[in-house]
Image 1: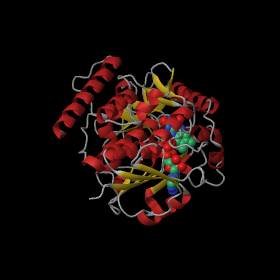
Image 2 (image 1 turned 60 degrees about the horizontal axis):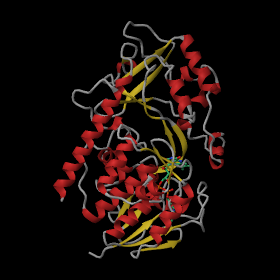
Image 3 (image 1 turned 45 degrees about the horizontal axis):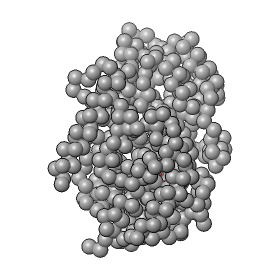
Image 4 (image 1 turned 120 degrees about the vertical axis):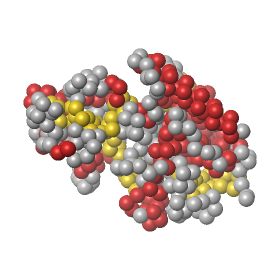
Length: 436
Ligand SMILES: Cc1cc2nc3c(=O)[nH]c(=O)nc-3n(C[C@H](O)[C@H](O)[C@H](O)COP(=O)(O)OP(=O)(O)OC[C@H]3O[C@@H](n4cnc5c(N)ncnc54)[C@H](O)[C@@H]3O)c2cc1C
């Protein structure tokens, strides 16, 4: 087999994959549409531009992002090293000089003898082995092509994410298990609110400070053109429609009586997020509130006073595919087996996760990397993308809640996270040594 590959999209995932494959001896053609064709968020002509924050999050091993970085370093990769070389002081976080980072990635990619960069928008699926890494702002023409090839029902354009909390930090003396009208296996936990608690929560939602929407998203959030995306409306916007809107909608108490048989004034449901029941999703709480504000407001819910947030909510423009429905277990498309999918378009969320996805796909192609252990963040993100699951697929970031529960879990949170990390890195070591 000729080691030749096309990569579409010179962002975080595309550049990581290009460098890895080039080092492994592949001849890479990397197509990037900017600066000729722009996206609504990128500002510079450089590859691997960080479109918003300059932070690649924590490096500490007692954080999920720190663990993810350690796992990636065990696999080998290039962009994290470049990020470290361009870092700026930010405590335990790996923050970078954004311009310098993009310039250095571009220099490294352009300077590699085995990579040629072609500045052109790709609108059709290429022949031969290729990686699609066109990101959350994939060009319209490519989205159209994907829609024809895969079916429009597998393409999502907006991403409404509800917060996820650590199951071990919920107060189980206050929440109770019950499915609405007992239809189901009592998979939901319920936070019951009395009248006073409910209106206090609604007031806090309305007063909470929001993230500023990008210019190109305002139309959506104004609900003018995209009013059919009703399921994406942030909870604080619903609260603004009327003080009782939530309790007649997502927080309606009907069929959710307490174990004592009382009908609460309103109920917020928590849906289990994973098989190990280590994390719960706050149903209907997609939000544009700032992260710190979210923590304060959702902790007003009875039972969540001390909840630890594994992921915060968000609503933003974001194209992604229904990966578990369209991908093989090695990130190739079931219908287009020579085409692989990487980055945010595949349904990972966050800069480092996108780089990680590029690395995983490159390793699958060059070495036939086998599925990584379930104790690792990379292994779980992989399973999230490539294996079918119940319910609507949503993008996922690195968080401890996606890992299987520890045996004899320590009560101390810091120790618990440290143990998760140690277990993961050990499992990764064993898995990789078996593959040598
Ligand atoms: C507005 C916005 C803000 C975000 N802010 C953050 C943040 O602060 N922190 C965080 O962790 N994550 C953030 N994300 C999420 C995500 O981590 C980043 O978008 C990340 O850059 C995605 O990496 P990627 O490699 O998948 O895509 P990108 O880095 O976007 O790279 C895709 C590349 O493909 C190119 N392209 C698109 N279509 C074509 C085509 N048809 N032909 C050729 N080239 C094409 C694009 O120009 C782009 O350069 C944000 C996302 C968005 C949309």
